[in-house]
Length: 382
Image 1 (tube, rainbow, N blue to C red):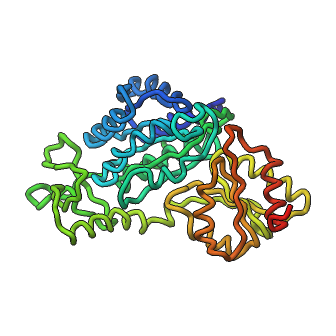
Image 2: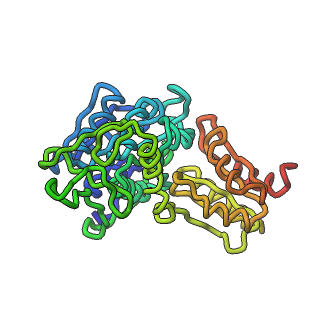
Image 3: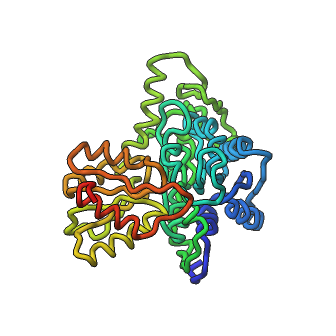
């Protein structure tokens, strides 16, 4: 795998998922994610895996949950309209604690929007797309190599926490081609499928949490009795209508992620040593933001950049520290304004926060973000 080659972001996502142990893909073709389905269709049968194209997006989500329950590391991929259709079963996966990865290669919305046009308008959908109180992990790569790395990370987190994980790519990265060198397989850290820690005779209950608050239900077909439901349930897996158990069940779903929040929240900083202002960005937009920041620094402007790799859980700690350090934050995102609201929430008025948003089916030009930096410094009077 270490041989350098030209690779597309969607292709790197496939390679990362396979390296992490994914052996089942169920999906429905939709731009700009279709290359992921095509890659899985080509590669899975050759390594003993299974690819199936379902009749629609809802069935695609259902079939990957079934495969995951039967012991297969599973993945599906789609874009905005398809992700909307998957939401009920994403919520089911959160409630029933089924490990699965959902790749969203974002495009312009709402509805059918502009197929294959770049956007980052699904930030809030990734967190709140399905109803009820639930946690969510969502990761966003900014390069082809990072599409590989975050695909592995997404699979590992889904298995470790037994939860759905969103790989929140965008058309820019999905269709980007770069020269990459992938790591050797034996150097990649893979989280294995969790297994029961005791037998039925020793009192096995599928949803009894381990010390990390994550249960170890058996895979279907391994000799254990297991009942799976989207209803609130106790340790046996059977539904209960009890206020105390309901509160405890929902709290545990959140707490199993919260206790590992620092570990799963990945952020990178650039030029922040002397920065008086900062640009916050993610995914494909962060590539342009990086160039804009470099151009601004050449003009003597003391500006840095914070790139969010983990979108959810939100990087409260990093943004809190940032808000205490700089005079202003510019949030560059390809949407009408979504992530900026989270930055404003955490900054809590301690520094100026402005949006550099774009939603016209074109990517940022560095000059647009540079103009946003100038506007931030002038207090919006440019």
